[in-house]
Length: 213
Image (cartoon, rainbow, N blue to C red; front, side, top):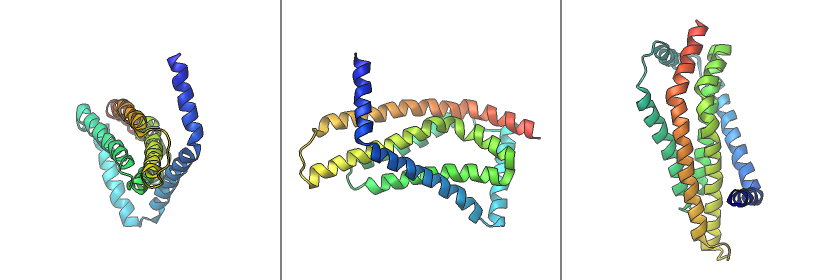
């Protein structure tokens, strides 16, 4: 019964705020496209420098000379958690609405640039490397970031209406509780994503770099 009620609440929420979710998804995709386009704007020297450091990085991974998985896990988890936490704070700050959208766009741009650069410089091998090094953890991280941005924007808009338009609506305390609950849930998913990035991705990268030789 509780599960059915929860599903209904989620369905109603998505229906009521479908335009916001559509907007943040499009914004993220625009960031991805922009990041991929930026790759083509780099001059030859910049591409060569980046490719040199990239080759060094993947070379170290193929030889097993990388940071301990525990360190990679903590680094990934804290980096993504800080990102989500900042969105959460901006959502309750009212004036943080545009910054939330900028953060999401930047995240998309980073993903697009990373994949675009790998494919641009390494062709098919670059596609495979991006598939095993970028995709696995981002299958969890990207939906979490998109949902965090959408919920932060939604909460911020409701705060604005409450404070400046004096509109009566749903009490803010229950909304804040659900908003905070999502943050906790998101952190749990980020733990799983960090585990994939720290323990699975290096193994897949070693396999791809070994077969590419």
